[in-house]
Length: 460
Image (cartoon, rainbow, N blue to C red):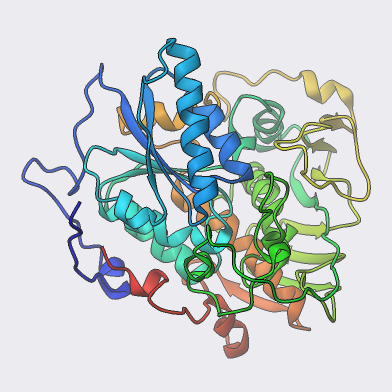
């Protein structure tokens, strides 16, 4: 397919230019009838993509038609995985010919594609989400929403102005498979522990590693594109992903590509904390913290840490690697704790130093059996996240974890990350999304972007 070339700068995206076709739909999109299958393309076929695809492909209302990965071995694995699923389900070996791309941007111009699943490293979240929205695609985006607060804001604005359905992969919000999170948030929001005063969030911490020698770039990997808008560095396998298998990738522990466990698990737990607090469209007004950082070596995200935040409603939040993994709400009349228990999404998911096999706990167990009345607050009830996304693509209703909620959860994570590095209390304006009278902190809201990649260099 011949690619159309035109530039949409960050200013254009921020201005909210709506690209409409003659039927009023976003350019590049089609109207999906009740009996039509939703054609979906997968961007990135790594460890998490196996989970995202597995939860999506099983629904008859959709069809996975294409896969893209900068590592062609993985892209071809994705094609084989998808086609094998359909062959087994249909009994036909040639049921579907899945298209393969190394550059997802070429794939986005296929007008037959209605939606995309983005299961890429954190530094490749915001750009493809914006591009997909501008080309009329709906989006399932793995958490965290973005690498920086600035590009997260740009993404949320673009997606909403293009009227796209974007679901953030914050699966603890869904009523399956972990209904305990919604249950606890409803109990908190309806005053079962009195007035909420404090929230404790427990996250794990990643260890560092030694120096890694420069390695030749595998022929199957477009390493320049994998790096994207981040700085040029020498290739080493531990800095990217395994060339054999789909174990936990090393990029998760490198600050060029993410912020570590504060966004890795924090995007889930802070989202739940915000849901229970009723602050999912806002953020803290104060934040401070401290952390250990490796002084040498390839893996350089934070280790053990503790941060403190305060919200405009007076509720305080403490996040620490010394707490049990999960979220604890503390009120004037008791407390509630919620976690996944022993459940994980992938076998290589890390855990915090301390563990709690109980996914749901309370200071007074009677609270757990409290009934939510018809006249009380009832939070969004949804099926599993991917099913909810597919339902919302058809109904055009907002999903359980929409883009702005995902952006705000990610922003809070990144604010805590910034606080780990600056030895003072930071004052934040959640409406303007700026630090108050702190140029050094505000400079950390974005990062330089290496062209031709990045949200400020979008070309379609």
